[in-house]
Length: 267
Image (tube, rainbow, N blue to C red):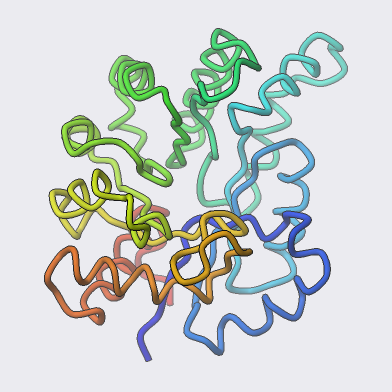
């Protein structure tokens, strides 16, 4: 049976509170053989560790989302604990496979852009120090994200551009740095022309599958709660965009996910 790797999920989200255990127990039987649950705040990093320890096939990423970086500012000002050292401790968990999600989000006015940039930089340095790849969140911040990654020689760190949403021109810059591209439910949307053009351009050996669940469910479930069970709809859209069989998409995406998270050689 072909295995599917959901490289970016948020099963700790409150949207799953009513049936989390039941759903996570079902996934392996439906071909979802590996999931990386991604932290976004101090609290969600703790919940991510709990999920890693509860389910053999669930791994985790530890990091602070740009929209939550005010938490790190507060911890730093309180001087009760060095926030970076706290993150480093969590990242040393044997099932932590990445630092993330980290980056820049200019959709909202807060936190201030300088605060976001400060903690993006600090977490990039942390990933380099720990030898872990990064999961990059970038929304309405294309140029600043690329500039910071290039300045930090982030290609030496490695990682994935989560929920890639920019043009194929921007994709060239990330490809030059050796990054992977996380593609999910948005690829199935009718208005996703820009993304479809980018996916046609990006080599298949640089694409990984992700849900970002509970967000961004694919058509025909758009607007509903997403889960890894809906990834076959993304596989179908990817196969159409690339002109290759669905089986080939799943096999390549599995191998890419294993390379991204330095899991080669693991079953």
